[in-house]
Image (cartoon, rainbow, N blue to C red; front, side):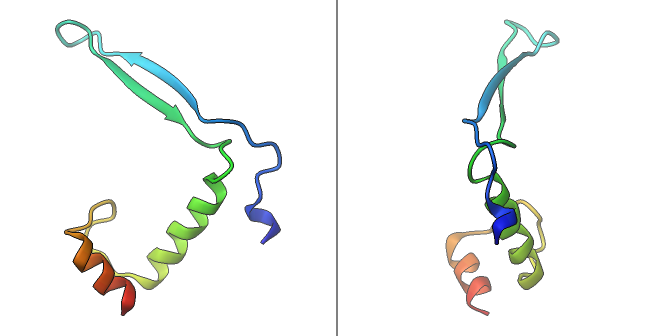
Length: 73
């Protein structure tokens, strides 16, 4: 489990990208999370969940009840 510890953690870095192709030039916030203290743990947990769950959609969950049912199986 030592590989899950971030050696030199930093707070997430917020960057802004301006959408110059849209009217009024809205800004899209982008967060760089790779040096955050929980990044490696989150990646580890995602991989473990994908091993044990067979979800249709990679990034979507139908509702919390179906998620709980899938997790308890």
